[in-house]
Image 1 (tube, rainbow over the protein chains, first blue to last red):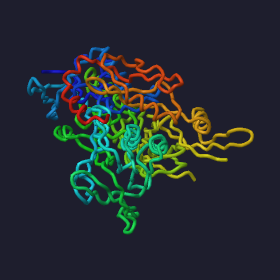
Image 2 (cartoon, chains in turn purple, orange; image 1 turned 135 degrees about the vertical axis):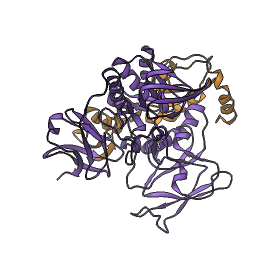
Image 3 (tube, each protein chain N blue to C red; image 1 turned 60 degrees about the vertical axis):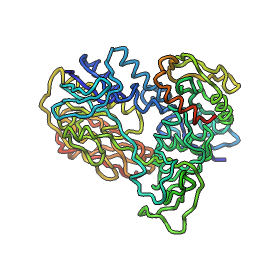
Image 4 (cartoon, rainbow over the protein chains, first blue to last red; image 1 turned 120 degrees about the vertical axis):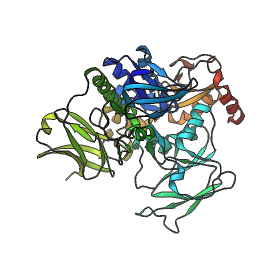
Length: 411
Length: 134
């Protein structure tokens, strides 16, 4: 099979990329989706708050996904569901598997939109037994919202990522008692509004600088031992406390799902754990693009859609006009910045740079250094869990060798 | 009297301070007018949109209140949501309960549901019935 454009993943990124590519003139394309229905993780994110940035209305996850699915359907874009991509080569051969067997699609361009997966409990080295009742927060979310099971009645949540916070409220609404949320850092990695509306609304305590040091129970979880941690994140002796529970949820981070990316031989950035890309979201193999959570983990789907549209339009441009000669500038993470995306910016073009800060504080100044020019932008507050962005004008790049972003405290 | 709130109206999450004086309520820390409105509502009558799922013959249907309900009514709303059973086709946005909170707020479907083409999910549903929380 041959296709001009293959999009791997039919979640919010894949759907938005497909629609944007279609609108930019691509017709011969397919979206490959491993699940029975497109929509990705939004299908199980039944809470509201999606779309506020992009559509200025508060939608639930299924509503947000449906909006893009409707757009794709209205254009007659082919979505191949129940189909798993098993391999991707650097020359854009996409090997797929579904009920009809194994087959290869030869593509002229590929958009990677595989999303991310949850970091598991196994990555944490927690002492104790391995009873039933341990779930990643997203797995529990799938059980409750898709299958209609409540995984437990007395819950302790480790990690204050947004999924953990959302599940604290969800389990409470369904009649479970959420004892507490433990967060090893001195700040939550979730959105402030989620701490307010998911924990504070229901009187669920958030213990910062706390972790689970032991899980107890034989067949089923019976309790956990939590403890305070010191600056080096080591448990402080004497602060241990046992909390009875039958369920532990882990909300301890998301990792871009880049197995196919590695097989294709694309370069990964150790900080974002996704591809190295330019402003078009094009990887270091021309004609292969990446967007959404497979590129870097986003906190808002609104930005996923926006990024996917950039990739979709760029893929169309590549297919219709071909690859042009380009000069690039690297982007550099300065003081208090964990990463900047894209990793390289095209000379002569405006570029919107996304970045994350290392620590949370109020009264921040974003410094953008391009050669001798320095521009500053004020932010009321910054936090690692909230991605920031700033647009750099092409004119400012004329005599620059790189673009450096730092975030400093307001003087 | 001063009270602090985190605004939940958008992902910005403004940290609001509401000062109640004899002259009225003064809100600071808000980036936009919605923050002021939110803090004032928190002081008088806090309201929330409730989202949940309703059990259908072959799976779960995501639902939401079409508008905010009083915070104190959330668990009452949830009891009615949990008691509901659907065994027919549902359109996205369709009203499932006309008045979920006793004050006229409808409960609507957040996704379409088709009763007949969900047959392949029956394996899952058998499992859900076995371990369901009813």
